[in-house]
Image (tube, rainbow, N blue to C red; front, top):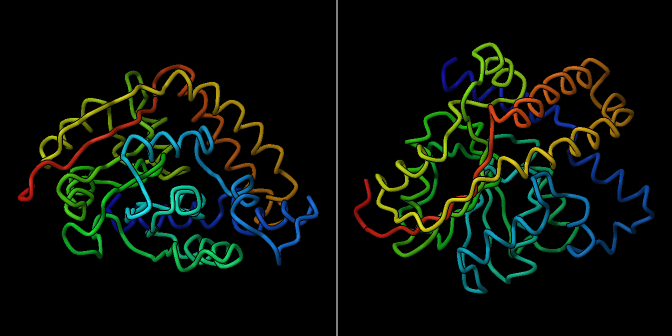
Length: 285
């Protein structure tokens, strides 16, 4: 599949994702939350679509030294939950980029509802063609999203390019381990948009080759096995909402593919990692 075709596939997948703006708003209303007074302290309990909740964001933020004067880039920012959380809890400025317009628009509306638009902004952009100038950001983050982006060498090079010397890349991602069958890899690519999955060693090599000092790598595979089994049940709990919004075939397709994904994590054929790297040279390739 070409990079362009893969990009279109990822957009289609996230346009039909069970966690979306409407689902978040519906849950807020169901819990009798007054949307006119919505703030980030409340919204952060509803808008997180990554593993380990706010604790995972805090680990990235604290390891990368995010503070009030930091400008952070969230690459593949989705519905904007981590970006809003960082801005609210660390006082920083956050820019998010995502390939899927519906999620960027949803992230903007949720941000407006919390009156945080002056501190957090989002735009549609391809991470392989980062629209920002060199050394723009103090920190670049990502959470379980770079698995959707092909050409990891180019992705890391672009993330490093826009990071200031001395700044950090701090991210988590879904990884390929050993024993993943070719037919399962194809199903995961078509159903979840995974592409050229990275590895613990592979990301280290790419970061170092791009002018970074890798300060920490943590294997998260075992922990994610437990988390993802719980997430599968959470997604199944959204069956009625998903069918109402997207149709029964969309729900069945997502359930089938996500079940395979969880199974591969539990068997150790897929895994996860947390990475922290500091940009050490101005003339990184």
